[in-house]
Length: 230
Ligand SMILES: C[S@@+](CC[C@H](N)C(=O)[O-])C[C@H]1O[C@@H](n2cnc3c(N)ncnc32)[C@H](O)[C@@H]1O
Image (spheres, protein in one colour):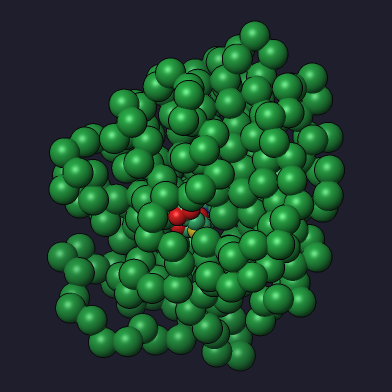
């Protein structure tokens, strides 16, 4: 399944969809300062997420628990938040002293993340870009977070982008989670992430039944934290 399609489906799981997969029109809300033009979904990869972030509903606004637990005793360094959304995780990390870059295709997500960072008195380097074209570099980040953003093709680039001893944190739907959602999601299989990070120290690798941060209902989730060999 194509990445864009996967995320449209998650967006649909959160916001609801018409038959053709286009998101339902959002409830009336105050127009955003930098509202994106009304384009058909699919022409703008972040379009449906823009609507969700404008609404600010259907997902957890507080930082992801796996991430907060994972960095509790880690010395802050350079962090990359892939699919940052509206910045709930990036702003949390910045408040802990991390130098955070957050990448997302959603113009609204990155705009709101900037506002949230400003309100918290911290800085987040927000980038509106498809992660497929973003230069992750080599040995660059002490932490890479991929929270409710799956892309198997990214894993090799993530492995290269982490510094030795750096940590990757992933939370996403399990492949069996489909039945809990209105549409199929191309989730991770049990053990799939362990196999994608060979030689890494696996800090956590769990399949759990819990409330998903996106959709906010009980389902089967994968939680994965691993450290690159030092
Ligand atoms: C389920 S949301 C998760 C947001 C954030 N990680 C969080 O936990 O709050 C997925 C995010 O991934 C972004 N996204 C999807 N495909 C992307 C891509 N190819 N490049 C960058 N961001 C992408 C979407 O715009 C959306 O904001």
